[in-house]
Length: 156
Image (cartoon, rainbow, N blue to C red):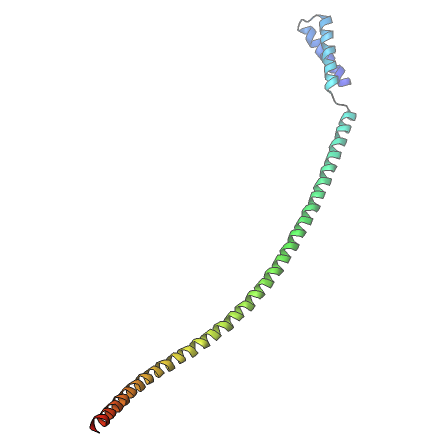
C-alpha cells in the first residue's frame, strides 16, 4: 500500500507540474489509484490461484497415471494376444510339417507306381511283339493248313 501511495503522490505532483488544476489532478490520481487497486493481485489472490494451479496439476497427474495404467493394460493384452497368435502359428506350422511328410510319402508311392507302370509298359511292348510274331506264325500255319487242305481236296 505504501508503494501505491508513493506512486499516487508522484503522479499528483507530475500532473500539477504539467499545469493540471489541483482538484483535477486529485481526481485523476484517485481514478488511477482505484484502477490500480482493482487490477492488483493480493497475496490471497495469488495463493488461491496457486491452489487452483496445484489442484489442476494434481488432477492432470491423476489422469496421466490412469492413462499410463490403461496403456500398460492395453500393452499387456496386446502381448497376450500376440503370444496366442504365435502359439496358433506354431500349431499351423506343425500341421504343415505333417502334411508335407504325407505328401512326401504320396510322392514316393507315385514314384514307385510310375516305375511299376514303366515296367508294365515294357512288358506290354514285349507282349505286343510276341503277339505279332504269334500272329505271323498263325498266319503261316493257317496258310500251310489251307494249302494242305486244298492239296488234299484237289488231289484226292
